[in-house]
Image (cartoon, rainbow, N blue to C red):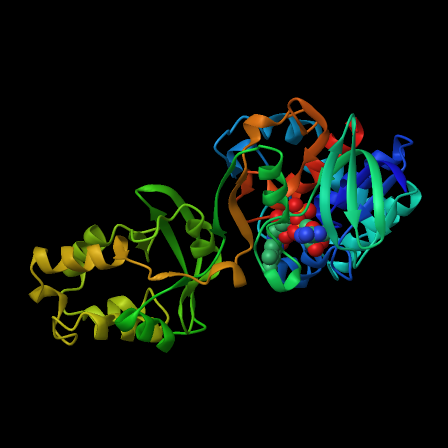
Length: 395
Ligand code: FDA
């Protein structure tokens, strides 16, 4: 079998790349070991796929080379993908500002991509195992469960390590190393935190409760989003965001009242309503369960005591607990639930225009396998589309 372009991975980046390469007249084959294309798309965004973010800029991505993503993101913007889904009759909604989700189901995105591939004459072979990829002069040869395949170009779009049950493997990293490329250490990103001992039990008691917070790690990267208490720790958009920048063993800082300077507020309340109790002040700001829990966590003062009897130091202690709550996660839920992989193939060794390996143009890497990871909110799919288009059009 001979193809101009063979793409490894029928996920977001691979399918997009395949359609684009097909439209340029190339003979394109997509291989995937999974029995279904776009499995991660289907489970994304709670089954509705947050397929892009209208506010995408390179600043929403983590990478050792922050300049690498600029070119592709500039050439294929969120509006381009919106135009594509509109052309395919996909209805969508803007949830949080800028975040576009399918109105009905993520299946619509997979349908769009598969239709594009069909129109572009792309062949797709699922449930196909790839055992070897070798350079053969100016071309490449793949040994697979459907036989040997010669390819002018091999595009690796095999994604990251998150959710192994959905088909994730380290195949792309192994292949990169085989061809002498550097692979930065990988770790789970956009993943819930686990807590240990006392804090785990406390979080479990509040499990299911969501509150708006601001969270930061290492004093940087402040994320203002909801936080969710879980049976094992903390989740919700705020925690997923900060998990991508969190260093194991280090604390995170949670501001439970991001809109309020608690030290000032409590002093004002003591002045204006000296008979009010701290518990009343807390229940005005938090769901009852959390207000109650806070008083139990910090039983150093009688909650029935009026604010007038609180010295400045005691108010400042509460300000610290509420505005700068330092908490050390035990770890994360790991690859089982992580939405993305931090780290990956070093982009310095690739062209940011074509995604080809410098000095080996017949081998390319796109999507999440690269050391480019977006924040939460549709950025990761936008990267998959943009890198897929840039690579596919230049194959
Ligand atoms: P992707 O993982 O999509 O595809 C890789 C493909 O390669 C898979 O089909 C896999 O089977 C195949 N493959 C792997 N190893 C192989 C091998 N050895 N041989 C052959 N094939 C192989 N992002 C976002 O922007 N908005 C969102 O709403 C969400 N939501 C979300 C929810 C959950 C639960 C997860 C896990 C992730 C998200 N994401 C997200 C992230 C997003 O899904 C991810 O960034 C993209 O799917 C990456 O696209 P790729 O094409 O690079 O990999």
